[in-house]
Image (cartoon, rainbow, N blue to C red; front, top):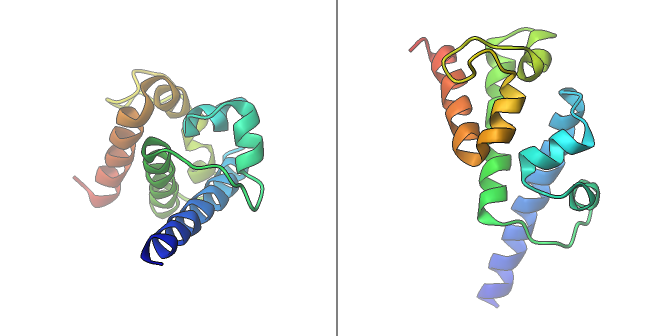
Length: 129
């Protein structure tokens, strides 16, 4: 019974994370390819995963990515006004993490480690560090 409860709880977290990330991809105007790459999924898997009732399992890496991206979205919302908060990931950036690239491209190329650094970078900006 305890395993069943743990599995249900994990599926709930996964469902919430996927729903939140799907909303973020809409707010950021990401293409199917960009959203799938950020989530470390194939495009066909992302198409299925963003629909309610997705039965697949996400890896630990994928859940960490979604969690960090949700946190990044929230930090951007707190730090910038719209439309910058929504456009920031697609704007060329000369900050130390980007070397003139768009944060989106840097995160796709750098995977989870870069996503976490970008999240930390924005959190540091927001905190005045």
